[in-house]
Amino acid sequence: MRRSANRTDYQSKRRSRFIIIMSLELIDVNPISFSAKQNLFDSNENVTFPKGEKASAEYFTGTAFVNILVAQDETNCFAVGDVIFEPGCRNNWHTHPAGQILLVTDGKGYYQERNKPARSLSKGDVVVIPSNVEHWHGATPDSRFAHLAITNKTKNGTVTWLKPVTDEEYQNAAKD
Amino acid sequence: MRRSANRTDYQSKRRSRFIIIMSLELIDVNPISFSAKQNLFDSNENVTFPKGEKASAEYFTGTAFVNILVAQDETNCFAVGDVIFEPGCRNNWHTHPAGQILLVTDGKGYYQERNKPARSLSKGDVVVIPSNVEHWHGATPDSRFAHLAITNKTKNGTVTWLKPVTDEEYQNAAKD
View (cartoon, rainbow over the protein chains, first blue to last red):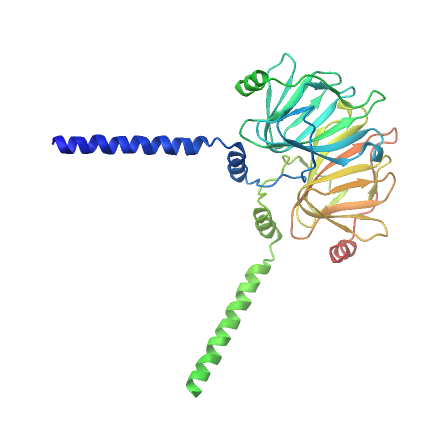
């Protein structure tokens, strides 16, 4: 009995250790591989529009890629770009003098206006950003995020960049 | 030897018949199921933006769905719509007084300007349609096709619809 009890303790300890290891596997501290799994789950391994140039670290926290699909000089009044945010990446707080349209093509992300709760975004969502409203957008911590951006041009340009989104502001957005 | 030769002939005839049957399976004359397989192959079972209203038979040959994502009155100068063409569907010849941008999000299709060869389109392609240039767009015979359309507004409206694309014009586009 005693030996069998010992064996049971030993087996249950082994089982606990196994469960802990499996849990760590599931948490997966590598955001890219977690994102890959999620995209696979979404039947969306590849983004819709090809990756562009790496976005400036001056205006983005984390890694993003910007692909200018249609330059403003090809249209009367707007440019079209595609932005891919790697997991955890977001742009700085900023404003647009004549607004901007976001069309979400892949992944999961957030859009937040100053003093408002963050809005969760996924494939197929549309955001109409009003003129001169302070806001930011970016990926969730565990998913890549891609959107098209249609930006009106004005004689005052297209964007005014402000301060980075702090880790606290970003973590609060994830809680909203 | 003779009997073994006969057996070989008989086996090779059976093999040929089997190959013919398998080939017919692969040809698959049903465009919808072929399209479904192709989308599955593209890891893209669902379209990026949700289906809208069925498009008017007055301006489309076959079945298409139009989803107005951003109305013109929400922007200074343009509207954004998503169009899903079922296999074989195309719109009529038409022009835009201030041009249009197409952003291909799913499937395979064509864009053709009058007196030019058709251009094949797939996910990630962009078309900048000049003002007042006669053209049409639509799906290939065996794949669904979806694109966003950004259309500039003018005091003369956004589009002038012309004649349907004939079956001959469509079949020639598929040959280009």
